[in-house]
Length: 627
Image (cartoon, rainbow, N blue to C red):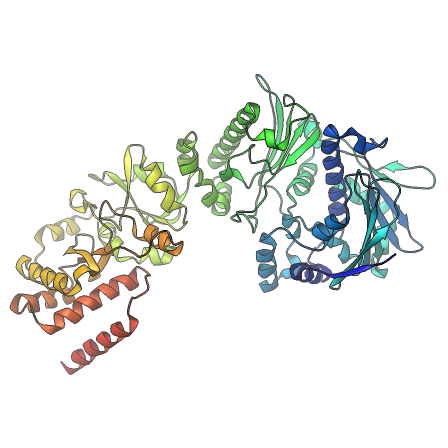
């Protein structure tokens, strides 16, 4: 028998290094992961056998078997599921298909508490937890319908071998050569306790093979089919970890039975922690579809909209045909009805949680709100409900607010819901575009999720109030009454501002200096302490939206902006005095270019010519020091 030696993919080697150094705080977890994988293998074969019953070949009773040898210090986990051939072994045990794992590994390697991070299972790589307790792992597997068996072996130190093997029947046997300090995992009482604790929900028998008769260690019935009154919170938690391959506890568990025109059972989980690969386009969901307890597929996009992709669990239909193919699922009308039912149920649970547990809901929103907001432009049917569930940061305070609360706080004369978007909330709070709004006590939503740029234009309104960006023209601040009577008086008298004639002269000079570099130059009613700012035209694209489009090569260059100047600012007043006396004064050209670059910097934009900016700044400082 010729052995073929191969090296692990680089990410597997990194992962194994973390596992060996006890990433899992609880070593019992390795058995849960291996039993869970064995159960999945049986589920897959049960589905394949619907079309090809010959695959069962007289062995239709699925089970997971545990065999111990306390003399040799060996534990074996065997199943009679789908099995693996050589290619499957290389793909499943030598590489990591999930691209989100790389991000996870980077995060763990940088963490000061890497040993306390129980997140490997989020990426479906729980098999490698075997190396926490074993210094050698052997896998012998024979794929259903094939004659040749294969043996995979590794000590977890960078290499593995594959060779042809002999095996009676189909399935997979994983043999762990336990280290001396892990002999406890050959003890029957220990195994009985672990299976009862972590794998009681597995729908097939987990059997301990003993000389005096085999013993089934688990309940061996599908958890979602049992009455809720008979299921403990711990059993719900363990089933969540089994179905979603996660290590956090679920935030919400939704277990219900739909009856009527269509019948199905849903056991759905809303997670506590955000998976590392939540935004990965290749991420597969963890919602499993069963038909009358027969596993059909996992990650069925037809069961939930993409904006609920963080939901995991099981849906078991009584009405779908057992022989439904994965290709047929996409257009099956029953699936559309189930999808609508599941979505409405989840929205109802979120609405209830938002009322009864405001703090808990806000924490959930911090983790998953940016994904749920995708539904605002993808799901018109549920848009109104999602808008009411949405939470926002605003200039009103440090906490979260709803749109309904914002509308209740609107000022007299205010007709729009104002917002500003950017990458960093603290930078947004310092934005010059907010100055006029702050002076009048007008609340502004602070949006930092890229998705906000997409749903805002498509939604347009909330309760007949338009959404308006403060970085666009047409803010109409003069129509809004301030709570501050002194501020109202200041607005009316404007004694401190430059004269209209001198401001007009300065605007003309700036326009001449900047040319096509700006779309327009005009006096601002939104600035109170800054000299200038950039805004988009009222009908143009929002500032941040256009930057995002340029980053993704959707536009070639950022279009010219409107430069607004503050006639009350001391710098603008001095420049206005110069402009009214000599519109062609050389200093006005440099000042105009500096004002534009200053406004760009405040917007977080890169300067087109940093060298020229530095030279002009040097000259201005030199003149200022000379004066």
